[in-house]
Amino acid sequence: MIHVVLHDATDTVAVAVVEGIQAGAELTAWIMDDDRTVMLTALDDIPMGHKIAMADLAVGDTVIKYGVDIGKVVASARRGQHAHVHNIKTKRW
Image 1 (cartoon, rainbow, N blue to C red):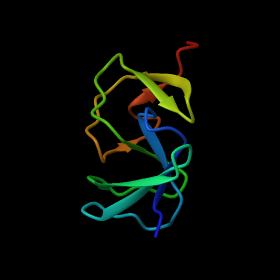
Image 2 (cartoon, helix red, strand yellow; image 1 turned 90 degrees about the vertical axis):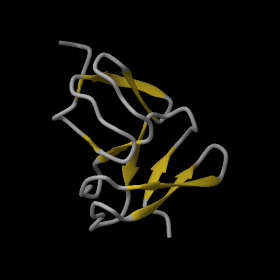
Image 3 (cartoon, helix red, strand yellow; image 1 turned 90 degrees about the horizontal axis):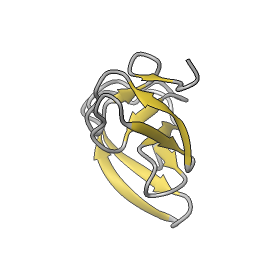
């Protein structure tokens, strides 16, 4: 079962595509461009449609989703943690 999706192996976040991801769950992430999967452990509950960190993210890091810069990290997140508006902000303001 695929739990999260990312376009490119260099994406730093993936999107949850199933409901009910709970902390501690072993997840399968599908990398679309390579048509391969990688495993990771959810460190937080991740609502469907929200992002999960695919790498450790430090304050100031650029966040890449679908191969595109979507913002910057404002509060660190470890691989497997929830990545959303509480720790990622746009660079526009």
